[in-house]
Image (cartoon, rainbow over all chains, first blue to last red; front, side, top):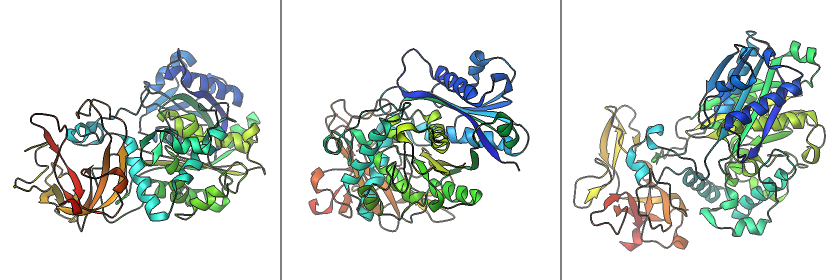
Length: 381
Length: 130
């Protein structure tokens, strides 16, 4: 098995872009990634493309060139981007190919995600009664977590406050205006305990990552950013997931627990070795719970971590340095790849105003979503 | 009384929820899947609040078929001892009085209280209000 490297990265800014389809934004990201790596489209031997609501990724060959490249579409819920990346790295790792692409994009309508019971193997009445609403799950999960672990609502506010502050420094972020903590806490409620600033919104955007072998990386003379591990996992027994009419009393772990544990094992490192992390922050509480689920702290310690600023850009473990989903929004197909993009930027030292100090060497990314899927990557420079 | 779906409640004067018991493992889930592996079983009328939120905006239609005029409602998870934790509405309680661990009683509730012949959905109310 060979090592896999990230040769080039590209991003179309997240948010809302009138006049550009999701595919257009994906193409924009691919061109930027090719230019970043010093490659041309004809050099790409294969592609995996992720999109949830913006059409088939392989249609981008119309714009990029009809080279006959093999192009596989990935639709895998919130782990679509992570699944595209996992698949792409396998092709390099196995020696089958030397250069390939993982690309993700999306363009969602405004408002909450449209979800149908039938897509989740649920009875129709569940939707009729008003339960096909993802925010209900996230709010219920954090309400229980706060009760058990002594997390205050103010700490949820601090996560959102940090997100917008970091987003201001990230050119690809959507929400780039800092919001004061009291305004976050006092804003209209969406689903208690969360106010409107504590949830991310469906959005638009595109991200492209070009992967290759060490030989190619050295030939091109690009910074050597190694993909140490990429995992995608589904839920174990006893987990609590989006759209759950019932939950087992005997609690189990989560898809995140497994994806994280296995990624650390594959990479041969542990949580203490990580210098910067991008963790799924669908809402403010998700970032907190995922700090623990990924092994970075014990349940309940987040109260202290946030109060002491340990997850700030200059802290012990900077988390969501580009403002995460809260500041960037969540175009499903692109979201997980954005985290990896941001980690490559950080490892190359190209973060500008949001650069993590101290020359970070290892970076971690984590996606979680419906219907109980998670994807993790660990990068090393 | 018309349940929002068949097989959701027991057919008795004071109905109970119907769960599904895995014939091999004994695990209980709600609702009962239409699947030979699961045997329908009536669930406990009483339980405790496991978690909750307040739904503050009207869910999108489709699929939501509740009333056009929206008032916020609590969406809860209720632990039925030794069985499972079910998702249901909370009724007859001030939002400020809701507390995790509070004892609850099952009470089917109309999805649209103004409807002439409303469909009933699963809900729980505080046990003290009995």
